[in-house]
Image (cartoon, rainbow, N blue to C red; front, side, top):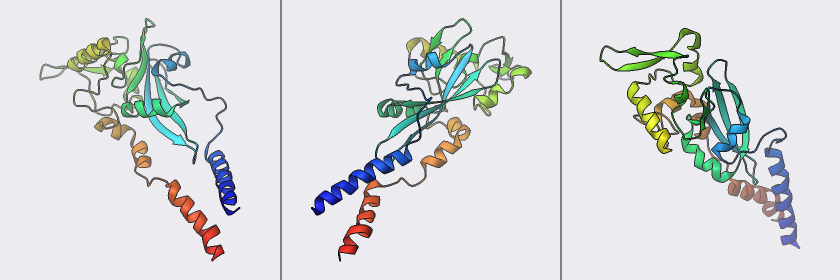
Length: 225
């Protein structure tokens, strides 16, 4: 009988706490592939950046992705979608990167690339500036200078060389984390641009085993003694 009581209590905790820690999902789209973003993103040119990966729920986990949708001619929007554990774990390494984009001709791609790759070289948005070293770097026109902040570039100045590497990786369908791997979950630029994600990730993890042990110790074992 005691075992039945314990099992029943466990079931109630399982259902009750899982429901308490899992928010309402009404109005949230489900995406389990990068291509699944396409119908959710309108307009062009546009760059979609993965800005957060997290889960909710105590025993039953629900996984979410947060994206920043950066347009060439207007401010950005944010999008939160529900996803699978497998896809969430696969995409985690691409934090801070463009995981979907569409150019002004309507061509779309989902190869993970540095954020805003679709805008580099677009003569409607900026121009190449020649550096004293002879290298040319991309600069947005004054009217679009906010794109630097939207994309989380900070002091990043893409060069012609980087632009060419982006194009090669795009054609090959291979992720490109930057010339010195500045982007992605281990990238220095990503860590600077999305510091709140890392602050949360460094917090102590909740231990289900410790919680249940303490719960039964306080509510069953000590009382029986």
